[in-house]
Length: 300
Image (cartoon, rainbow, N blue to C red; front, side, top):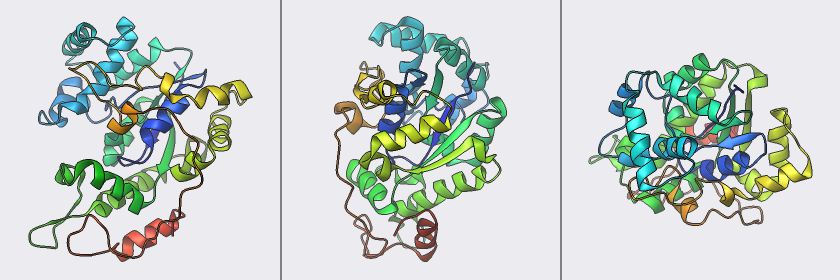
């Protein structure tokens, strides 16, 4: 089995489209959010992923249905659920391996944001697959927070760790989640050999996709010919680049699922680390530590 590639990033950091683009490379296979490194066993995973947020299960159900039955329908999602129930005591790593073996000789690309929410999850992935490659995908904290605010309007802020408890009542503040998750990633990657990690700004990739996709697959030691690069420009051809059956609709960003076609864009307008944040009701801005960290990552 080829070692997997894990995209590490907070939610709303271009993970859905980047994973789908990479997954169209002839030697790669992009999956939705399978969340298989959040626990040791499938039974424990079901406890970690809240029953009040069933969409966190959708990506794995869709992947199992597609790889085992060749399609995603109400019936095959039901079969996928049963397949996982029969493996309740199996390790999550063994389930990941079983799915990866289905796509051989291609390598799996996984973009589950839950993986980078804790260092222990990333360590679990590395223990299971010592040769795993990690892509740290970045997004400016202002545009990432704006995106979260527009899609959630504060729902799920507590789960994301996006609450400022220094106010009464606590204020929704997405910079806290951006800082926490990216700090986790940087801390974890400090202990990973240079050959197994790559950092890339999502804004740069979206503005100049061919150059940055070529850079990624060259780092992976894969084909860099024009045919392979052209294939990656069509994320809409992924079997997961659409809404799934009613019992497993998501697994990727809803906006991407509704419109997965990549459209070439000009370089994004610069956004600032200064000024008030639209999701804070008190007019507050970025903290000093977030500004410093963002500048270390190449943002202004």
